Length: 467
Image (cartoon, rainbow, N blue to C red; front, side, top):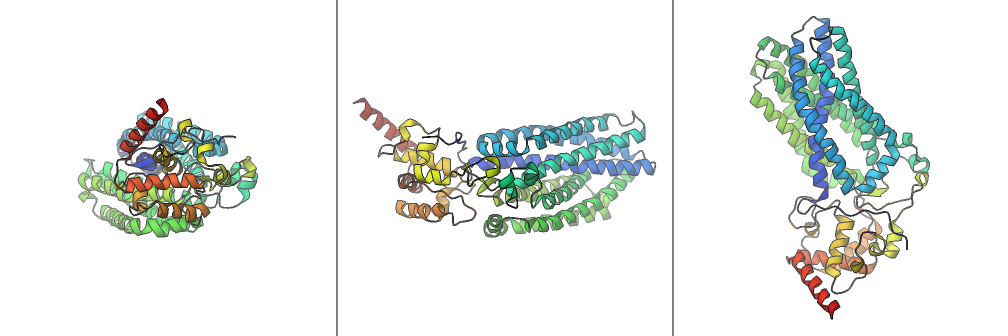
């Protein structure tokens, strides 16, 4: 029997798989958004310096540029590959699907990124060493290259939510994938956000300026730009919400907004008041206040926003054709891709998954618990953690600590089997595999030490085999 093109399952006990990607991703977003937004602030500020003959503004640009080199480009250069490593082991088929769709888009993004990295170094170290007009052209080139990297990545991220129509499934065209339904709304949201974040970071740098006249001039310039960027981001986010698929809307209204809505409103109101205060009283802009506001916006604003965006596309990881558990959910004729749900329902994961140990392919009393744990990891661990009380949508708590195997199996053979919950993948397994998963979850919920029980069963099975 042909095996599915599956990969080994990556799982981090306690926090789950998705939190690894999420933590790295949020740090990267804060760093990268700051760099892209700052590139345009540099360009606008240097244009002002050039036209109004205010070379002292270049002192701030150099200080902010040095901060970017450490904060955005070192941290960003570490977390960028970190994201690649994390998503490759956690969601290899999802990454493979994106690469097959966007290989040349990513190639172009890396060209722009190279220009961006060289540009920021040249921008900082050539201040005062080349004529003002040449440096201004360099700064605008840096800004446009920075925004181009974000534009290209946003097209890919938007496709991960959904293509938005049936065209891509039939054609497999990169254009149909890239220019998807929520591409422009997503691009506008991130563009406004990056400008606002860059203004907040810029105020942090400006608060360290000793020249009060220069500080006043810079803050008066940055604060209104941050306000406009924040307002634009909110307007585009409201538009973005209108471009979401049904499963994302259900997830948003049911699980996400009840948790994060108040925090996000608080971030918008607080950031707005902060920027207005800075504009009004630039001499009262103390470093401690600016650092606190940056931390508040990053933790209470960026983290929930990124988690919401990642969670909303569930149960899919890309294009609404690859489930989070790596199973192909539907046919994609344009790519020659065939759905796998029905095949798994007929034969089971134990027979089709290439990385199931041979001793676990047939379920018996001595391995049922171990098989249940393995199947739960394969089917569920990309979105859920398996330990009670852990932060990432842990399965034991989702079942409210149920120890009734029949109850757990009934849920799996009902809503999950038929795909009636829009934010959950359709998991249709043979009855014996369902029973193994139910046995494992019931054992976990009973408070027993699963690892110890499996070890004892393996020892017993070894003794029996030796006899």
